Image (tube, rainbow, N blue to C red; front, side):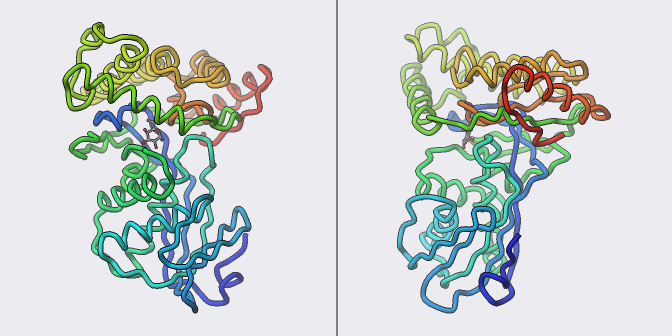
Length: 353
Ligand code: GLA
């Protein structure tokens, strides 16, 4: 892949990276101030930064082989550059002065698979800028700035799950995060287990409009139930006064939060797997963010020997499934499940495992 020197004729001043993430439980709970349980995946996004010789920012994506030049304080409406530019803008809005920059992005985080390639680029860029400009930013502040960049400059009204995971998670453990207080605990995977992730081969579609609609439905449900956020309710029966579809949306969020909290009590691999299976059913039936390909893939994984549980991961409407499986057999389990998924007529791919 092309190097910084080849594009910009100079060595970079700093380099930084951040991983993609996969969420094990706690889907569509973060914007309801609830609980999530992500871990990092091995795929990373790397950002190399130097000073621009002129008054413009120069952004280059090695994967897309595409460069974008931007005058400082101009907006970038689309593509990878808006994440970089968004990070610069949120830092400027926080009072930092950012000189014109040369930036190269190289990434192995799959795009459109629900593994947060955008949070990886934001966190890598903010880490790089922290290093370059000697900024005093904690990992939580990096996540918060990344989320602002995404909301304000990429137009996705997301919660804080992805950026917190990219900033705080590693591949060996899970992060239990309370998205209201940002309190967190690092937890081990259930003994003898590992995760595997398979891409359904169906890219997400309608994701942002449906995402914003679900979010609005949750806010309407919280208002109708007289609470600040659905996080404030733990009994799913409380939803029974709500009209459809708000009742189903709220029921998903409440039961999903309860599933994440259950893990905190300490559960076996089998019990953890059952929580994942129940999460998939709830995302399919109550939250209605699954699609036939994800149901097929999750079903195949759930029925493969050695798998404790499986579910769609990320916002839904396409993307990947995550499964918890016997650690020593993860690779062969992933291959077996993929073969069955291929036989069912789909074009999937093993991403982790
Ligand atoms: C996307 C958003 C996250 C979260 C998930 C669903 O990844 O960016 O904030 O809401 O969907 O859990």
